[in-house]
Length: 121
Image (cartoon, rainbow, N blue to C red):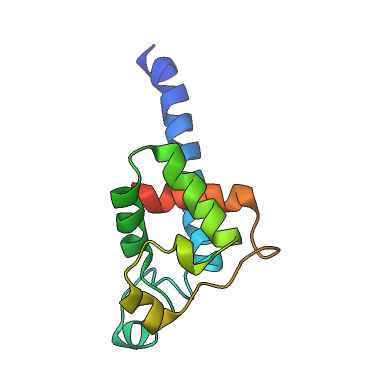
């Protein structure tokens, strides 16, 4: 009887873990080449093109208290980046410049999934 009761829980956990892995792969594919993800190496650090994803998550969490606002900001900035929207200090802009728009390269739904993933890390 216990097996029958736990079977849905086991299946649901498996589905959620697979979905989490899919979002991780999506984030690495769409964001990882610039935002320093995965295994850190000296080469990756030396060739960073943008602040690491965890730094981006940190500044977003400091700026916004509402989770939906955090995600909406990430979506908006990813598709329509502008200097006046930057949350990082000017030295960051000097080092990395303004992020290029990813319109047409990533969907809004994908950005929302990635934003959730980043904010949960």
